[in-house]
Length: 126
Image (cartoon, rainbow, N blue to C red; front, side, top):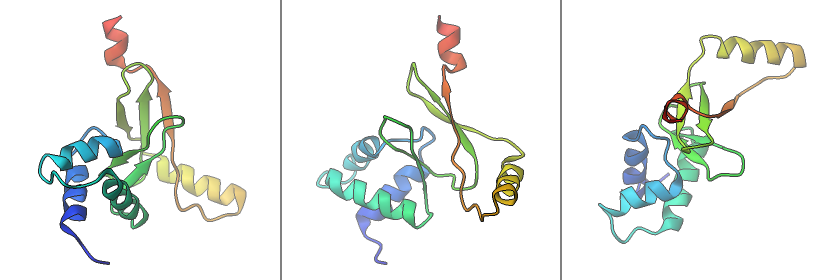
């Protein structure tokens, strides 16, 4: 597959982001360096990068997808109040995958767990 300047910049933008950006956020950041890039190009390339396993797509129900530079198995927390998404790491995620696969008699290739609620920053503000 061809690596274009746009795709490389989109990938680099996600890899340099710690905030799990949406496609529109990636678009805004990329546009600062490449003003003529289109939103469609950003969406298309994010989809390709996620399909190839270069980045992780985080599906938050009823909200725009987010993108993550960390592709290893891990979970996320979504704050309903401020909208922040951050990593939640558990040592036993692989064990959960293995147990589910064994119990169901399937091969589990991926697991996406999203915790939702109110983050401690928002709790402390109230």
